[in-house]
Image 1 (tube, rainbow, N blue to C red):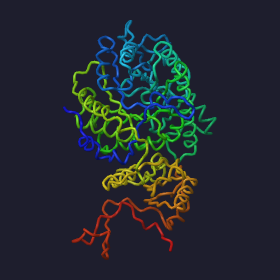
Image 2 (cartoon, rainbow, N blue to C red):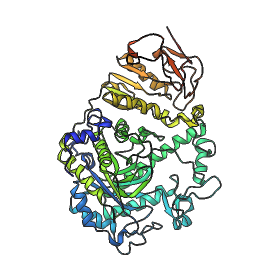
Image 3 (cartoon, rainbow, N blue to C red):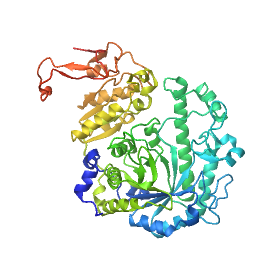
Image 4 (cartoon, helix red, strand yellow):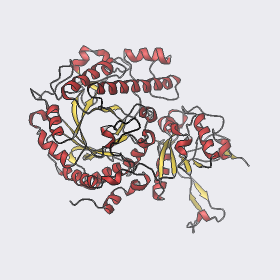
Length: 564
């Protein structure tokens, strides 16, 4: 395979308009800030690599051969399995399970030494979500429990028990492991696989959580994560506070061994987020998105879209995205290489949308090695052209609201009953539809998180688009009014501003005065077979000759009354 040229790169990422519409937001080289101190080592990172160890890898894994490969990709850092579920170094922390095949070897140490010989930074990949049965027997208070009192186990590996972030596993056991690794290996950072994620909160019934519910929410753990419940809303805030507390603790612990070290959480999920990414960004120095590839009906542009979500809250700080080199489609073929065009498209979208690609393989003894060349070709191209990825100013003049509350909670009230052909309406569809239209129209746009609706953030944009931002705070409605008063234009769809941030219905639209429209009834629909009739010609109808009907909307708009 030959190196990518400009035309091939644009083709690989064309579905995202990522080169221009993402504004080329990529980290700059380190330089002194206002205090005279150098920026963090990871602020200039453009390329990452990762190999996941399996339990047998200590027997045969060749550290120098692996690091020769990562060096050939000119990566700035590698992610290597350290511990948590399973230690790949000779740990002395009680109940920190060693690989059965580790013996006297220090696999993490061997790999880290080989990386450093090649001037590659080392980040320890940690697993905090599960532990082995010996830990459960010794410390049952570390773990999650179901409502019937049974411990919660891994679905595929029942010998692993799910840990609870409200227990001391997170505040004592994990910090003990970090401190041991700081002393023995001094990694440049720690990364936790799968935690905290941006997905739904887990409802745990352990004694810790029962106490927290009683003391901080005034209730008991609910059956599900329903934002219509006042108890759940309080628990949501308690959980976000706990995540921030743990994140800050682990960041502090990482820096005990090395002041330039960093803690990195797993924040993938694209636009479908439940945990508040704005609040997470307040403690995150580095946003890593574990968004490895397409599966099922994943839109072709999702990787660049993930970059927009991250950039909407990170204010120019480091963003990376894991690019799976294996075939992670609707069936995960974890030991087969992804098609070259698919891998290149995902990596190209990551780079073009302002994220550093983080190339990932599973297992130290691959039987299918086609993935290696796929990564080398793109990373060679990226290294050769990295000077073109240093511009930090977005060229976009359109802002699309990232409606976090709507996406997280829209299905938690009566809207969940809105089904078409037995399929519940997906709360992300509204944003995806607008996104697709903007791409097809070749418009340049950025995401703006709904909690960043201030004058300074909106000033560069001539218009703000609100894709069914049904759940908005009063303060956010006021910020939108202020934007219009300052000369900005606004377009909104469907139920925008109908509810507050938790889904409590207002008597009228929160932005009723802005748009001159009021509620006159409830939503009708969805309908799978409705039509609109053409009564008279209009410029917008050019091209629709030969018909007097057009497909109609899923929901009827007769519940609106327009003010004159």
